[in-house]
Image (cartoon, rainbow, N blue to C red; front, side):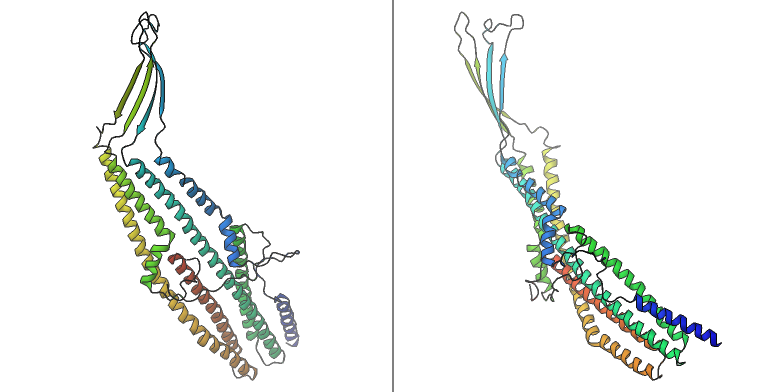
Length: 442
């Protein structure tokens, strides 16, 4: 029996030494350290400038907007004139230019003219399309700024959780030392040591998952902005967003007037209306004017040259199957554009209401953790530790209180992250890239 106890004590001491060796000396960012000095941690504003300047989707949308900006002048221009050169009424038997009076060599020029108002309407439709492309760039900017801000907040959240986990591992390690010491002198039981070791292993498992998420998020941030893999993300700099106090109706009203998405949809509606006006104008026929000059060779009798002018009109013979259908189609598309705007307004109103309620809920939860749950959990751990030292409570009660404190710390960090995420989404919904204009009322 004595030999068994000695062997057990030696095994427990070796396990404690292994735990001490496993305990990290300081928090890490989840990215493997490099021999060379890595770039400094990225500032959020600096990162956003780099992201918007290099992101291929933004560059592609800008290129599309620039290309469509060249369309209005093209649509307003007249069709190219046509030059005609030919020979008329040349006898096939002799191919002589002097045997027939009507044989002549001619040159002419013709110009087509759309009906009055069509060119301007076509220019407007092209300009509306260019405006849609330009506003798409603005909406993509909002999307990327939102994604970057959420990533920065998540990175800070994970770093805080990592520090909390490391701290909890250290406390559990101390608990194991206490349990081993009491067990060595016969004041504890083996189950106490095993319970502490189990919680320690659970914490180590949780830390591995956090470090994996940190590595993945850091790599994604590097890829998005084209940063080198060794960029240091151990201390990202991003300002927390303050409370958004604006009234929901004013937020919706402001977003409709400011957000690029609604400007894009407004341009789509204007394009549909201009296209409907152009379709109605298609009932007016286009026309072309042609001038030609014919030269005739002299025969024994002198012959004069000829001058011709003519005007040609389009005849709307297929109005019922073409122009009328075009008008009906364009009116339906205009109605569709109006309904799309109303549907997006309803979605915006619903999203803002939900996000504002989430902000209120998270603020209440954060205050509860900061002023109630977390201080009380810390006091419970201190009280349990004091009671355990004098054998007034079970060791598992001490471990349970420490685990409860750890969970509350993690949950508070999660609530804080959720709060900042909610405010970030509110900014996006309102068409803002920062909260300088909305923190104290819209």
